[in-house]
Length: 229
Image 1 (cartoon, rainbow, N blue to C red):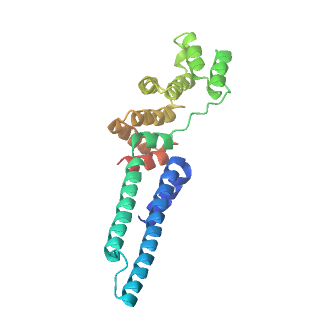
Image 2 (spheres, rainbow, N blue to C red):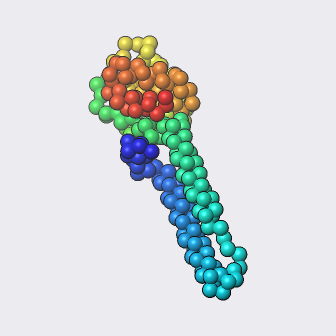
């Protein structure tokens, strides 16, 4: 493992308690093997002294060289398997989604004609009442639902409810209308939806477009793209 990989791995451990427990387990197993080898070595030394002094073997002498070889092989195999497992896990769609997804934080300040309802929608969103958010949005006239902030709110609420395909449909609206303010965020969340759905090719296309257009999510898109590739 290179220094860069080690640093990145240590950051992952700090974020992920389950991964930390796996690493701790690996360390405990390795330590247990080492302790067993120390005991075996001591027993062999006693047996060798008994043979030298009394010219008679004391019980069965363990072939320490072979035991060390197999123990070392076990440690290497465990470490290699653990590292491979960790590397594989850190590039899996669910893990990447969990690592990069943060729920959108809408501002409550609005200037729309439907100001009061929109405030209620955004307030419920901040409180995590996502079903209520959808109910409120669907209760207003269709043309008013095309407000950019409401579209993004609806898409993100659907993500929180694990309705990723429906969320993508909402985010796609930003491709058909002349929205600018929330387009970057919609593309980022759409890419994460495709990752969660394990449609990595579609996610890669969107992430590349985010990088090309140098949006606020460009740096995260680069990091995520490197882990997918």
